[in-house]
Amino acid sequence: MAVRRPALLVVVFGAAMLLAAPVASASYSTKVVVSLKTPAFHGSLKSSKGSCKTSRTVKLFRKKPGPDSLLGTDTSNSKGKWSIPIGRLRSGASYYAKAPAKGNCRAAKSKVLSIG
Image 1: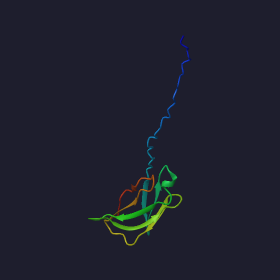
Image 2 (image 1 turned 90 degrees about the vertical axis):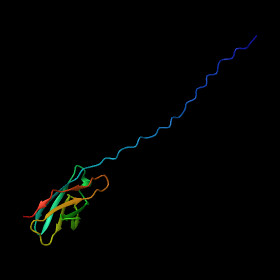
Image 3 (image 1 turned 180 degrees about the horizontal axis):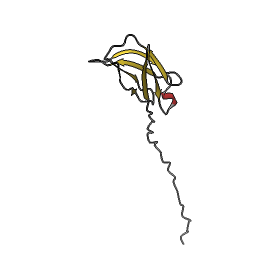
Image 4 (image 1 turned 120 degrees about the vertical axis):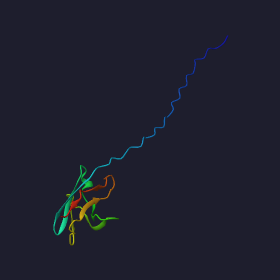
């Protein structure tokens, strides 16, 4: 007579390796505001992200044929404000400011100011 043995049920739990999908890092826009109040160009950086306004480099350029002329730089303060002293303005010249990208803060360029 055959002996009946209880069936042995083997359950194997496999550990599934989960790979994290790459997380897209957020990118924040910045707006450069510029105005002329001699003896300097003044302005501010505006952004929904506070760190995109503070301690950012701002560069002032004069448009010209070929590469534009860099006239000066400043670093924005805790409120996003900056100021770049200027020398003599050229009649008919156009000027603009730029803030290069920094971390998750996108680069930005102001509107062009033309001197009449």
